[in-house]
Image (cartoon, rainbow, N blue to C red; front, side, top):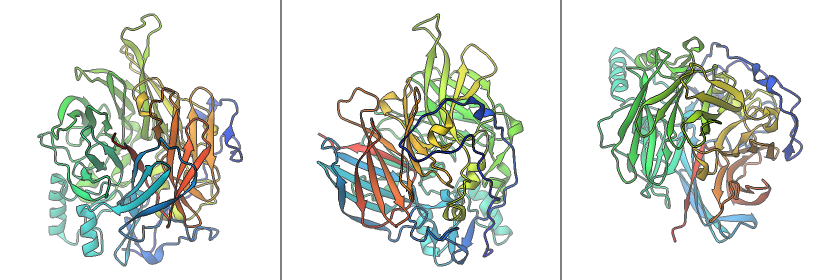
Length: 554
């Protein structure tokens, strides 16, 4: 492996208007002209790993030497009491667990290239009557254990593709990819409580679904599906309620997506229906999706799986993906009860990792009848895959003073259900409200699949190279923001107050990594977005992705 790292060419994010970060509230007129930017493809030179000597954590100004956000966690596990600043609500009784990459250094010589590669680290905070205890622990996946034993990664991660030493190795890799054995089981994306009380961690390979103990964070066992639906890959964000588990299984051989349901307490998935891709030559990347009360929305974007990359054990333009805007962008809507596709429309080019929510829009002249359209909101990157290359670790550890974070917005699709061939994509709120940064979103789960008002997400206080601000997006009026210089917050997770009826009655929890090496959980009032308290860890915490809330049982 070469000792130097090739970093994609830096591009300054084009300002739509001068960025403003000085106040908690940002209010100014809607500017729909900002949506005009179109996608374009560009070459991307990558390396899967680099030697530790090539890393430069100091960045441009040397201020990141203690930055914990993109530094591997120092020990495999820890637990203890946590100091609390401020006064936590006495009703906040339960456990918040966050999943995400926490270990990017492997052995003495190898370090991963991309944020998404890191081995999964769980962080737990248990709240009890104003006090808190905490812990972190590595998920003991087969990929993680093999890497520790051999001092290097052995399985394919997001940007890491082990190079075969000879023809025999190449043939073995091909067999492993066909069977799924060569793909990672590193479940570093999501953590979610199932309807029967079990807690699952997972990412986009089906074999990565594992069960954990929410109290000790111990890795219990792989979640084994008892059906014969197969599938090597899955959505990293299944939609889980108390009664069911919905997910999508991309079909790489016959491009399409299988929509499946699993009842609470079961390990057997059952097919609802199948959506064939309209573009090609393979399915689009499908990290997440959206549902309404009646429908499942299946997105098909032009960032598509690269079959050649998978079969040849080589990296494509975007690791396992290719950007193919000429293949088209589509949105499909399937009825949950019948499995019938009720709409399949072409939409403007889009790039979205995370979908926020969806709901049904009634026809004005048929109240209570069949919906006229489905509205889908997402964190949309203006039809530009640059966000993928922006998450290279060396780039995150450097260039922190540069305005190179790609622009993002709340993208709103309108999918007509009258047979029209085209759907619409517009901006739901002036992007300057959240600094043209929008990702890592959550909502009040009671409003899942319904018309809603509030989104909690990570925004941008520019100039920056990574989302560094928390934002409460009011889709009717404006956004309210929280920002502290030198801090990197993770997904703001909404927890409702028991008995609440208002959509924003509760708190928001976000784990923050700071430049001074600190790590803490920030607790905000979800209504005012003002700080209530901080729960401090005695060490820095690496950046993580998504969390879940497990309330105390009565």
